[in-house]
Length: 208
Image (cartoon, rainbow, N blue to C red):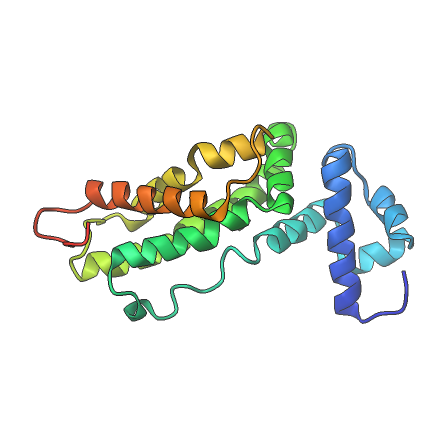
């Protein structure tokens, strides 16, 4: 590896590891093989990551870095729950459809049963944080009477399931190319309307 800062070397390691995991699978990869692809020694690799599982976790976090940008920082900037959910959807769904994120999803689906640690990492670093982020927003809008979500986390899981829907599954399976931005936005708006309609009383959010 060329001379660089520790942060640069770590970033390079994570990216190379992502490529190796995607190419060889989790079970078919090794720290020695990743070190060989890096062009460095296994000792250098172990300075940054002490196990293959720890390296996979870093890859998972890198793939999710754009998904969990803080859109819950100031919930008062949203005029209503509809605007909030559309914003959440337009941040999260395109990130899920990035090629690196799809590679990880495919890897977990194909090898998660044989290697439960990667399924656990996927849940803890991707699925759960997405649900929890949306739950924070839903709890806020429930508290001001715009939507009925007394169990915000369960409601967030329902929204995220609707958001992923067939689009994400078909992308993971390699059946479709990525939909255009207009198609994605139409899907997100439709999902939002359906979700609000199912979680709003006659006296709640009139925008539904």
